[in-house]
Length: 307
Image (tube, rainbow, N blue to C red; front, side, top):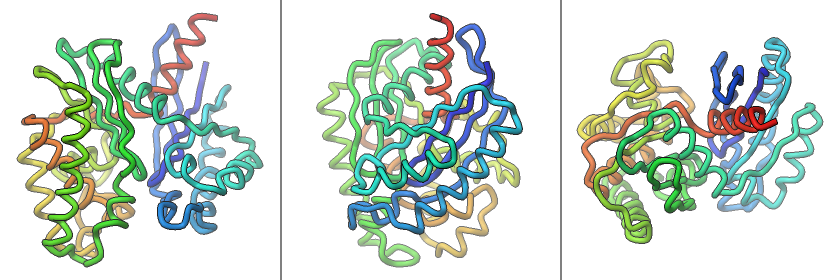
């Protein structure tokens, strides 16, 4: 069966078209665009007309691509921005008018789908932590094999951190310090509550960590095969954090491999991973392309297998 999965996130909207067969997923096409659905939602409590318009425009493009691939089933979800916004129903109504049914995913489902997708693929011999740094929230899951031991949805992502801490361009040193202190407090709390013990592998998901690879390899065209499974060292994260935080947004837009719409949020994103390395005492993070889109497709493949 040919399936399309859509993830309407706080920062970006993504599409995966895949063939699901015998409980496995074979990706055929993948794309995503920065749409900023959750821009300002923390402050106002509402999805703005502009952000809804941007997201709907991208979903129309996705709809055409889905028809082109003769997809039999569409599974669409939305996450933190829609969980928070008082006018989510209006947004969902507009998406439904396109012929796409969207479900607001719970934070547990989001964390679990990403965790299961990654342990199914990488099969780590030790415990695993999956870190899905989004725009409005960050899902961190800890487990051993298929057993999810602990998860949390931290109520901040790159868009939230940007809006809360970064006021200058380029960011002032005091802003970066405040940002890092906040992230450190949150991550130390998670680590304590989860009772995490060595040894473990860390799998990073989302546009920030994939951008590190794309920038380091100077990708003029994004190569998901090269990105997936890439070991990003903490030194590499530090290197790019220093580089992007010391220049303006306009200068960042010229960096080969960095998506233009990510030029502002890359700073809080890399601050997060810099602090993560320090708090968890790891030397590297394995970059994964298996985010929510793949997790949804895998769940559908397993469901088909049972029928």
